Length: 320
Image 1 (tube, rainbow, N blue to C red):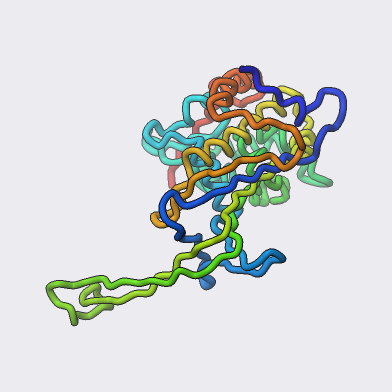
Image 2 (image 1 turned 135 degrees about the horizontal axis):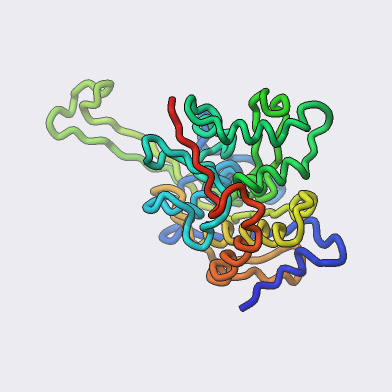
């Protein structure tokens, strides 16, 4: 089946500014779930117009999860439908160490830019952004550079903070974002005891003894995953229709793969999709994950000459 993205990327007019998607979720078993926690805060509970809400998964965490569904951990490479897409692969002693896909800061990773032996990507970025050292940052030129080395940075954003790179001013915000919230939540308090059958009264500071603990989980009237694709930002890169199609298709793949494969967020937070809907633009039909898997290799191949290396992979040898 041919995927039709003309509603999102019309040939003759500007088209919609956003693609907004909502997925109604529910625990795969029971009613309780464990939200994400924040340092010095714990679970993020807040009041909204429709009741007490809870952040189940933050925007930054969802961004990392949308990247992780693109990565084949066993092969240390992109999943098969995405191979050929540009990214930086970091090796140490000839073996895989990390990559711009798996690093939280993507191209700004110290393993990519700070190797004492291999400055190839750093020098390439410096040379290709030299014209932006002074004056306003040319976002279109920056987008073209990022496409060459790490196409996903055009979706997930990047901040090249090193002063040697145009004074540390090179950044793009996320064009693809998502988060998960629970609505009308209540605490499901419980607890337990870490048992020491040998020495129940031992020193707990050293790991001995019986240690009781409290545990807070939550129930909710609804759990909803929200996703937004900034179509205006993607068109604003000025990279042409084939790249725009690739970026939108890649964003849809990440969303669908996360909803199908990535919803076991924690041991006590295993969710399932109950309903999936597009809230904007009206009438757009989401392609399935299988349809996207079939289409993306061709879309990647159509953009292959825009990548820095044949096959998309740029290698860096890291030496501390």
